[in-house]
Length: 130
Image (cartoon, rainbow, N blue to C red; front, side):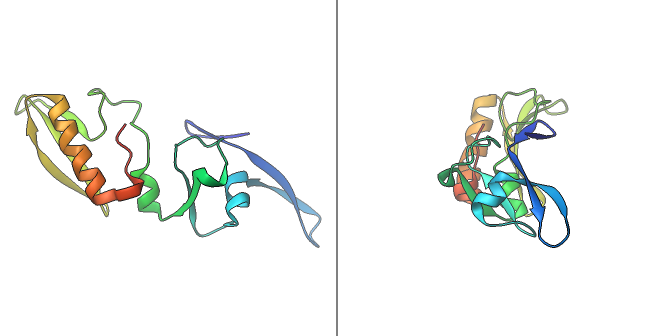
């Protein structure tokens, strides 16, 4: 097992032919047949769940859409933060590296609803709402 940040991944040690060397290979890359230059995404976010039905090839942007909620999140919702200046909840989403403002809301749940609708529309199957 290999830990990268807060994520844990299954690994396998493989020998490299004609070099007498060995290195660790991430299991999800081995199973998907993708070893380099492309990202592999765990649909459920569990790096140890390497069933073929749970892994898919993704761009870096798609993989970032499928991230879990940040550990320092205070609203309890992805894409929602408190705006001190307006004294309202702010809803936002990233698209192609740019931050899109979705609006200000009195209720954090309403702000999350705005994020959820935008995420499903923009990120499609890579959308993660929590």
